[in-house]
Length: 131
Image (cartoon, rainbow, N blue to C red; front, top):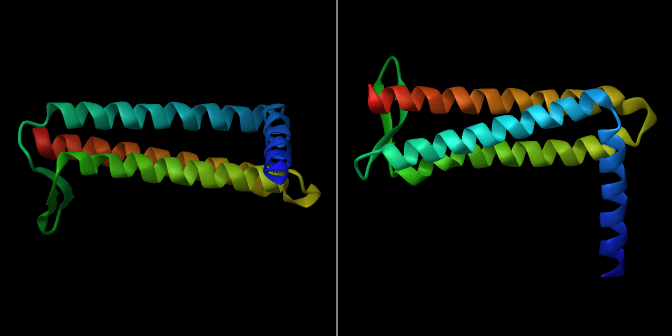
C-alpha cells in the first residue's frame, strides 16, 4: 500500500509539473472540452433516438453496414477517453526525460486528433439517423 501511495504522489507531482507548461495545459484543456462535448452529444443522440435500433455505421459505397442498440454510441466516447488517459500517462512519463519533450507535446496532439475524429463520427451518425 505504501508503494502505491508513493507512486501516486510521484505521478501527481509530475502532473502538476506538466500543468506549469503552457502548451501542455492548453492541449489538456482542449482535450477535456472535446471529451465533454463527445459525451454530451452521444447522450443527446441516445435520448432522441425513437427506436430500439439505430444505424451505427454507414458506408458511401455499401450503405448501412452496422445496426445496433443506441447505447453502443457511447463506445466512441470511451475509446477517445481511453486514448486520452493512455497518452496522458505516457506524456507524464516522457516529460520527465530530457530528450523526450517532443513526444510529450506530440501525444496530447494525437489525443486531440482522436477526439476530433470521434466527434465528427458522432456528427455523421446524427446525420444518418435523423435525416
